[in-house]
Image (cartoon, rainbow, N blue to C red; front, side, top):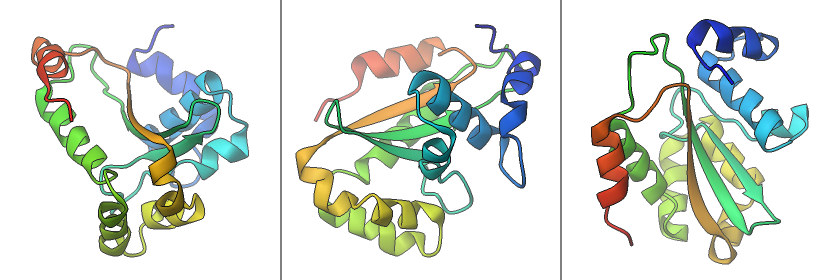
Length: 157
């Protein structure tokens, strides 16, 4: 599939409603097309707005036993790439889900942001021990050499 900005905007046009950002619309499109979620389930999985603590969406994949934490990025330029800095930031986002204590801190510090209510609605504090956390980064541009090297050499915990 061609994911250059103009083509992608045409694909996600249906999802660009109200005050939804392009990245939220992109993630919603992704969840419907690749995760095969229905529209309401995709909408309910997204929390991409101010104060989201780096989390654009969360989906509990019962079949795989995973909690998928999403971040999505759209670039208007196909010449841009994803480097190590944004991946390090996303890794930091994922570290917020390492324990019940860290998740509770995320909820407390998020205030009224959607990410806090989504975590509560999904009952993540009760499910965290039984599921594996996965970070899913969705973008319409490629990794740079720095990004690729970071993923190859990142410390595993």
